[in-house]
Length: 453
Ligand code: TYD
Ligand code: MG
Image (tube, rainbow, N blue to C red):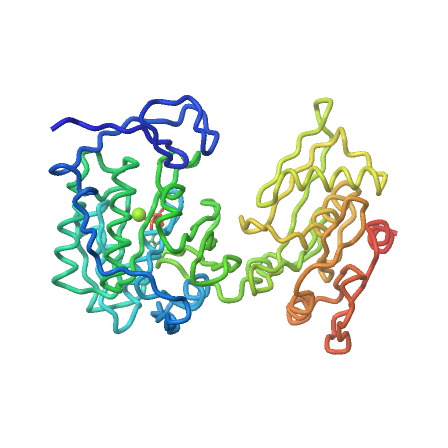
């Protein structure tokens, strides 16, 4: 049989019969790799049954029942999934090595009451998994561990066991006999994920796939798999901190704005049900350079501390560094401060940090960022009883943000005295419901005048 090779783009999985320097699909340079895809017999694609049972249905005749969901007994995970794990769906959990993917899924396996679970590991031995299981909470007699990398034998065990949930740790380690290339290669990953997807749909088991990504995202996997799976969850966090965030990047069965927060402890991952604790644990006295933002992550309000350090630069132009906040957004806010606030920051170094190693995308954090920068640069502390929730526009205007009532309610609950918001956010706001004083302002100058005089 003639060996057939195809070139794949490592970034996006595009195919080509010859090597190309620049991927026409995603624009990546030097990303094509050659892979052997030797097919069994003639070609398994040609042998595919064409007389299958599929046929077109008129859309009005398709009956729709609400998708069945499995309770994972993990509140954070349930919420990120959109209300539980959908039967017959494939969920990819991506993240850097060591972030806690295996721990998370093993905990789910051990806590999912009344469900049969098959945890397939291609990375660790039975003993290693058992050791971890002893460390974390939960017990499930119907949890089976299999160390196997061959997808055909995994399916054989699945047929015998008929599990409700299958966990594949990781997709980079499994291989199918149909393809000749090595484990972790693009064609193997794609084919195995495809087969698992088909298995999930026919057996109505739910499948979790663990996918590693390296720092530079080089290894094919998550990017390529996004099209195949139903849901993509991203497990992330700063490894120097205990907090871990589970975000949904794609979800066929729910919103992608939800965030699950965990803390890695010696006994596994603890669910953080009150995320403002990240902030509260560190809030005793007012220091210059810090301000508190009332942000939202999906449907949950979180109060977060922003920390800034402004220092004279040793070089001509100052450097800007940001952790947990978009660097371009920081540059934009600094430009607004310069232009509208009259602050000269061009030859200052500006460091910005979001407490707890959390990454925030909510634009409502803008005002707290700016206030913390001025606080540091002027060395005037902001009362720890103040918090901020407003986006800042290019002309320094305070822009309204979504769900302002929830933000105010959370700040109120936590005992803050004042919250600074955009005056355009007050429409229909029932201020009498809150003890906290609401300070609606129009622009940055107003805020700076109010706080710094
Ligand atoms: P792991 O789940 O193996 O990460 P991944 O599967 O994403 O590669 O998690 C590994 C890290 O978690 C490791 O550095 C040890 C730490 N850990 C704890 O701190 N406490 C625990 O109870 C467990 C099980 C792991
Ligand atoms: Mg692992």
